[in-house]
Image (cartoon, rainbow, N blue to C red):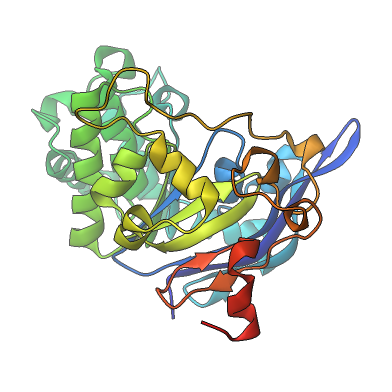
Length: 327
């Protein structure tokens, strides 16, 4: 059984204008020891998916209206808030894209790591401190004994992100969710942080859901990738298959947006238009207003999830023959 299974997830939020539904049938799964990337443009529903998995929607006027979230064989949607408090941080952990929103500016960073250990582990503070220092050292934080006593404002962006990762790992979670963890970092530090995530996943045997818009990061460390567009997963499968032979027109368009060595100036392609807002999702396939392969059927018919012989799942009408049993 996969570590995490998300099946046909639908979500809605209550607004002053009424309800909006940013997710429509999102499905994917993650195995233990596996890194899965969730990629798509801003507004595609990546962060909402993470919030749903973490059980945080009720705090932001949201709710799951359909689907299942199965984690370690347990149905997370049946959890009470008391059960969630035992799971968040201990079994599932979320790392946000801005470390300053996760770090308290008036507490030493080491104490903030220890706080998570004391909350979720049956250990004393005297036992937690050396564990925190060892964890910081494993994340390549130089002089961890000294950094332990420093405050967030005394650290660089890269060190702050390492502290946040340590906070996420301190109680030994089985699944780590990282929401755009390298956005605010320079390129060299990004590479270091990405390598740390991969190392932690392999060494600890945990699952990692990496949310990003950076296809380079996806290619570097992910085993599988789910491509999201306007609240739907349009393509899901192993990274190499999707990068080498993308099936959905949106995935192809995203890959064409990546600059390549030797490319002539002015030849970089862009996807026309913008991701529609949740209030203006089009009928039929939600990508059809921007798609170069659009047909009249795409404007009316919502594509189902189709499993191809290559092992890729794709939501596109041009593969509808597979649903009828043909090759």
